[in-house]
Picture 1 (spheres, helix red, strand yellow):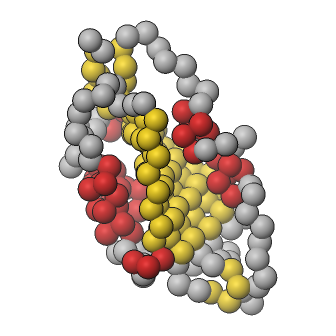
Picture 2: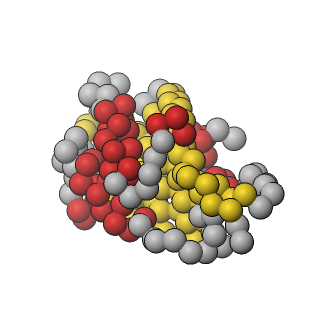
Length: 86
Length: 86
């Protein structure tokens, strides 16, 4: 399954109000248990970079962190300002 | 299937040389066909932010862009400097 199918496959298109969305996924596979955990700080800076490109409302940012053994996945979902599809 | 299973599920652990990896996925769902394409520039800046946290060798960065209708997914895979697992 391609990444586009995985990320967007299940989402149904809703009415005519299309919301522009940006999703950032940071997946970190560590070589061992040690080493600094820089994902949270990195995530903060990435959102700052993104806000230079699009008007991001902090309330429209959802962050989720999953951890399993040496794997960490940080998911940032941003719903961008509304567009009404013509 | 959780995102950790999707991203890491198929990868088998290789020998004792664990490579630290960082994967950044930028998924952009546009509200329509128009609008600027800022993903390439955004990707460049995100890698710059990441290089503040980890020593990133440009040769170890693989970038892949998938497009389908209003969906764009930019995948950046970075293999970080080697650690030998004790």
